[in-house]
Amino acid sequence: MSQTVVSLYLVPTPIGNLKDITLRAIDTLKSVDVILAEDTRTSGVLLKHLQLSKTLQSYHSFNEHKAIVKLVERMKKGESFALISDAGTPAISDPGYLLVREVLSAGLEVSCLPGPTAFVPALVASGLPSDRFVFEGFLPHKKGKKSRIDSLLTEARTMIFYESPHRLLKTLEQLVEALGQDRQAAVARELSKIHEETVRGTLAELIAYYQTHPLKGELVLVVAGCPEHRESREDKQAKKKAGWNTAK
Ligand code: SAM
Image 1 (cartoon, rainbow, N blue to C red):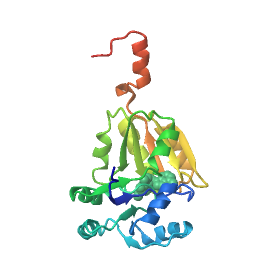
Image 2 (cartoon, rainbow, N blue to C red; image 1 turned 60 degrees about the vertical axis):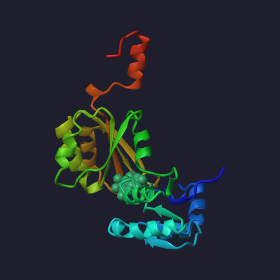
Image 3 (cartoon, rainbow, N blue to C red; image 1 turned 30 degrees about the vertical axis):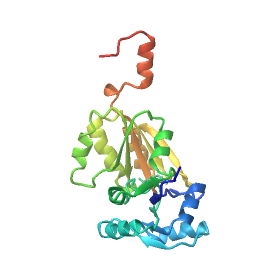
Image 4 (tube, rainbow, N blue to C red; image 1 turned 60 degrees about the horizontal axis):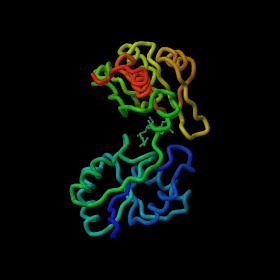
């Protein structure tokens, strides 16, 4: 059986703790011809830590469209690439999607390694239902923010947002206006770093907490889905056990 030739690997890198890199990620970074990096200086530090000397080529959202055509041509000629972002999994609130799309439409193979990303540990440690969730990434900064929040009014799944520390309070206030102050939520800050903390509570409790605790570092906001629209697997199982007809 012949092995598929992969032209583009997406390689997740640590979101804080440099030990969070898989053995396969290191092997892949060693084996490719070129590493595409969002910020060559940031990634240079990681490669140095891994004692890996490799050609780094800049690939960020500003040059994405222009770079793709040339990169796909090089892949067609047999060069292999790994895309890494500053932290976490490429293409998750980071550049990558457009490249993946074009490489695939050129008939070439893409592989994404499993590995670090901020939203998974934030969701899992939030204590909120993780059987169904929706990743909302960054909310728009100004225009369109309210309508994006309003579009989530009846969202039953747990919602995950990336947010910056200086915008968190305002976002929590806007969420209270839309979803009510009693909605459960969690803020996961500095995941995998020395000052990692997860604060859990209602939206109103989180506002009160962050009004008196200065917010620093990177964070993920996790918000429970609309309780009235949510029927968890456990609820369904309990109903089934009790002989309820849920087929409607
Ligand atoms: N590609 C990354 C991933 O896979 O998670 C996300 C990159 S995005 C540009 C950066 C955002 O991810 C931050 O603003 C924050 O919301 C979240 N983030 C990244 N590292 C984090 C960490 N160590 N703790 C909490 N949130 C983090």
